Amino acid sequence: MLEKITGTFSNIIRTLSGKATISEKNIEETVEQIKMALLEADVNLRVVRRFVNSTIEEAKGEKVLKAVDPGQQFVKIIYDKITSMLGDKKTDLSLKGPDTQSVILLLGLQGAGKTTAAHKLAARLLKEGRKPLLAACDLVRPAAVEQLSVLGEKIGVPVYKENGASNAVKVSQNAVSYAKKNGFDTIIVDTAGRLQIDESMMQELVSMKKALNPVETVLVADSMTGQNAVDIAKSFDEQLGLTGVILTKFDSDARGGAALSLRSITGKPILFIGTGEKTEDFEPFHPDRIASRILGMGDVVSLVEKAQQTVDAQEAERMQKKMMRNEFTLQDMLDQLQSVEKMGSMSQILDMMPGLAGQISEDQIDKAGMKHQKAIIQSMTLKERRNHLIIGPARRKRIAKGSGTSVQEVNKLIKQFEKTKLAMKKLTRNRGMQAKLMQQMGGMDMSGLGGMGGMNLPQGFKMPGGFKF
Ligand SMILES: Nc1nc2c(ncn2[C@@H]2O[C@H](COP(=O)(O)OP(=O)(O)O)[C@@H](O)[C@H]2O)c(=O)[nH]1
Ligand SMILES: [Mg+2]
Image (cartoon, rainbow, N blue to C red):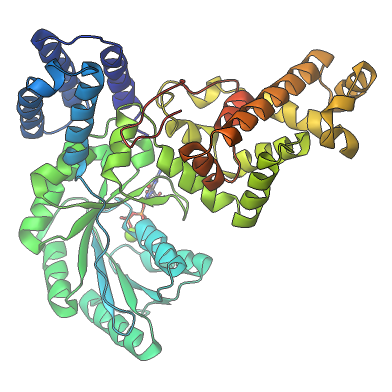
């Protein structure tokens, strides 16, 4: 996700952050570098020009040149500009209350990801307490109705379909009546796409929009197509009027050109991004978080949310209490290793870590090492896991043998454990923001995570939001 642009930007930002003084020439050179990075990312030329002019103007003001920390001030300006390019603030769906029906019309070219997005969105709304109904209104692609039925069943959301129907507008209207009768409050309409925008598709959509009066008319667009996605959005908007966009295949988009141009060119917000093929690979679009990612500052908030979803609240509280009493044990470390596994692939987590985004690939992570660490702890007796101090040379030898590792590895793990324990002790002494963050993360210590994967977060790294590591 955004590897290429993040790689370029984090280099620029790193150079800038270290500077004690900044001259007008520095500003011009940096902006020139960013301009090249944006063009390489396939960002619309008009958007790039606007960025260049406004950034230079603002950065040359007193704020940067006379600041105590000019590098950081400049980074802040860049961060703000990128955030605003992405749309500034998260935009929510404007759904009506649950006692009436809200229609969400999904449209876009064939293969953009409409059907996939329809079910992901349905699953999300269901989780939020709404009663969604999926309407199978792609009658052009032979297997489209079946595809949606299978997905609907998987997530437990009913799919309205009519066998042998040929009028998609009628089917969509019937779906809404069905929803009204059966107490569904949100109807997600999956429509037919074409390889290119064509007249008959547009006609069908125009009639459907007229008939259904949807609260949201959402274009589903493939982010990998860059500028093309923006052109498509423009053309759909002119003919139909869009309320927003879902950008799919964001997981495979290294450049980010579509995301960075869409808002400025079309004025339409990006509502969600698709980040994979699975149901849960779907996130609301947060411009500020994506901007942090692009600038190589990571996405700590998303990381925390992801962890929150994985580690249940009780477990989090239990871990927090243990930390406060300095009772963190090897068993807890094992639990942590397991919850990291549950959180998903390491590369997804790394993408969100400040200073690491785009710099470490999954191949470089010592996955085997993590497996070994788990095996080592699993080879310990419960008594040993609870009190690492009793693990002398003989026990270490036994554990190494039992886990198929070496005594050196066992030693290393115990040392790492002691380091993590110490770090936690310090953290609990210095509460405030950090402890709160830890609590939110279910006791998952970032330095512990670093230790496990064999890496550490840059000390004192400042996030625009005020987080500090
Ligand atoms: N990697 C990835 N694949 C996606 C995403 N969204 C959809 N796809 C894949 O794109 C292909 C087309 O999706 P589909 O929903 O059938 O497109 P439609 O023709 O617009 O309905 C399928 O193979 C999906 O699995 C995404 O966010 N990430
Ligand atoms: Mg489809």
